[in-house]
Image (cartoon, rainbow, N blue to C red; front, side):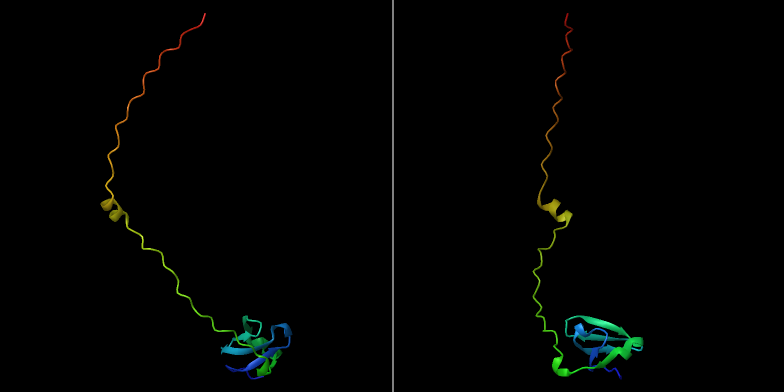
Length: 106
């Protein structure tokens, strides 16, 4: 079978894939979008198992509408944070009271 871009084919080794449309052809492989929704790459050595498919049975994937992603607020650099929020000076440490020596019990 002659494999060209746009040709509708069926894989006799995997009937469950349904019919597929050839999307791209290179000397070593063909990229085929099958009716089950998966795009598969078939090696040129396996072209013999591809048979002509009925175009009426090919179900193309629906166009997916891209949704705009919500972006997070930009991060503020550390230098800008430091400039906006002045740090308060730390309170001086108060030394702990000296512990009284233990008294011996008699």
